Length: 125
Image (cartoon, rainbow, N blue to C red):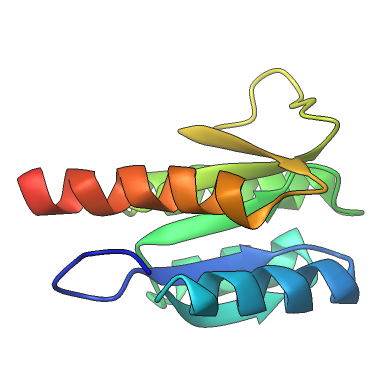
């Protein structure tokens, strides 16, 4: 469980249903709120552009609509969201925005470390 006064709201964008479900469950276990879970970069971009912001956007760098995923990540970053690149084997394409990389397959320990750092930053501004 993360120690923060306010739950971290997360947008998940990943084309794999199983990954979205597993990531959402792990984040909820850590005390985060999954605000949105979508399968495409286009869906993520629409949510961010419509003002449905979260604190963190976890975006798969290998989405089928990679240019839209990259656009969604840029828009999320511009909206003040922390962008976490979800990357198979830890490989992130050049130019993909993000403050952190979570390699797939991910572990609860890796997520705890990354989201713990985000929680600490939020507490200490």
